[in-house]
Amino acid sequence: MAKAILTVLLILLLNVLVGCHGVDSGASQLIPSNMKAAATIDASESDIVEQMAINRQAYRQGLESLIAHYNKAGNHMKLAWAENELKRLDKMPQYNYIIEAIVAGPGLKAKNSIAEAELKYLEASNIEKKARRLIFLVNEDLLRTALDKYNQLIKKHPSSDRIDDAAYRAAGIFEHFKDYTLAILYYQRAYQWDPDTIHPARFKAAYLLDTQLRRRAEALEIYKEAVKDENLSEERREIVQRRIRELSGGGKAK
Image (cartoon, rainbow, N blue to C red; front, side, top):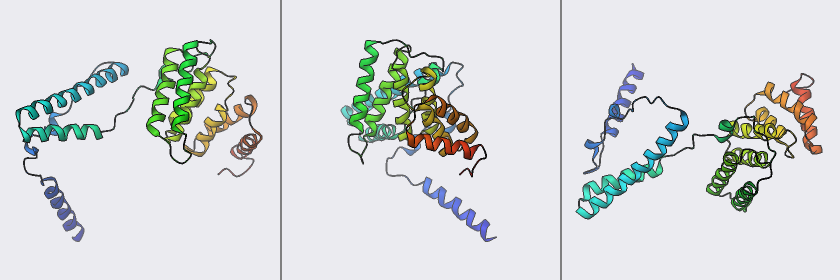
């Protein structure tokens, strides 16, 4: 009985809180949630994402136009509404839904020396270095900029001998943000695109699968590839050999 009463009180409290609005807040003019749903679009992912980007920009420009109009007209109430909506738009997270390593697929070959790709890689790596200049304070916006540059290289120069380097560096950025699934994908692309890559990409992919995602069976297979195909440091080789024994039943896996 007490639980039922508590539930009713919580519902009433929520209704009261939702119903609290400031003077002239425009609460009555908010579009009902059942009118916000968009029609299903029969299109490819890239088409939808491109259209969404266009819509985002048009939405922002529309709000800015409204703000300018109401400011000129002296309509302070609607000006406040438009400014509030723009402020909320600025706080809304926006994602890059197209993952370049997925679009490119595993079949690219890092083989051609391309001057423009070299410049793009140098630009991206310099931005990344600048972002990581301070040991305990990373500029994450600069990291995202560097990530975008690496992805641009992969997209525009898919036959460049720098695509494995770009994928490896991008993976490290994803790892910083703890986007481990994407980090693993990009580490895998590095050695898929160049089986002889100088980077310990197999080790890194296996280690994240093992320690972060707990996908131990997949990690074991890639650990075996790493110990066979990569020039690992002594410390990493010891880690790989130990984990192979443990995951194969020769020791206690943790």
